Image 1 (cartoon, each protein chain N blue to C red):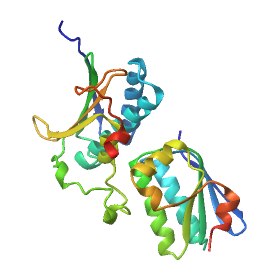
Image 2 (tube, one colour; image 1 turned 60 degrees about the horizontal axis):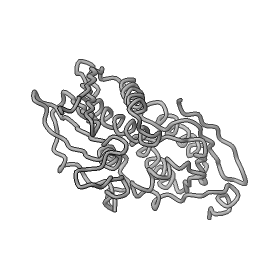
Image 3 (cartoon, rainbow over the protein chains, first blue to last red; image 1 turned 180 degrees about the vertical axis):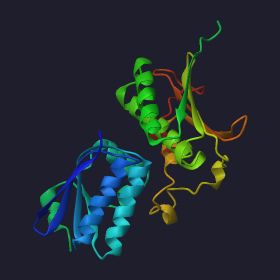
Image 4 (cartoon, chains in turn red, blue; image 1 turned 45 degrees about the horizontal axis):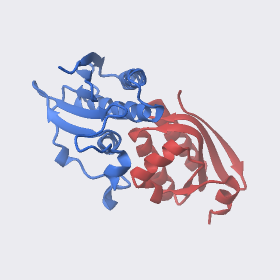
Length: 114
Length: 157
């Protein structure tokens, strides 16, 4: 299953709802392109909803890190929402869970941006 | 009694599709060997990462070069070997992805994940060159030689 993403706005936060797998190739490219589109259109508050992403490989992890630094370099803030257990486990064992701001509720996440 | 060994060999093209194919095949093999679903997932992911390593870094996406995958079972364990036709590498030369200064690197976590998800993980030079990644998973209910069953969490602590 490849990765699909749609962007919506909630209270000034660009929320990208992803479903599928973030893996080497198409999945990673989809993530990269969608984050670039958000940044390119001036979005500073970006929330990646990963509730329907049950698989991420090392390339996908790299792409998440790249998205994080891309948004930060542009003066914005990228956060993650609703991790599945498998994605959460991967971020924990790679110590990236401490790097990302991970939120579990959309409403709380939206109000957590500065 | 001599332990019975079963062996499966695959030769993969150095193309992106081989990554998904190797993962899918290894997960089917694991399921038929009786591994629980979560273990199949971890083994499948380890195989995926090993083939990514061979495709991307070993063979450098050169379609002329092959990736050789071997899966062996004996009464105690499953052994997966992934061999590429690249220059080979020393595992000591790979930066620690958990080090503070490497956390924001966009690559370099594949070998770490294999090590975390499998019971044993080694890298050696292939007989005719290349890097051979060797991963071992004990079969369900089979303890290690010291009588314990190792988990990824044990190894991380």
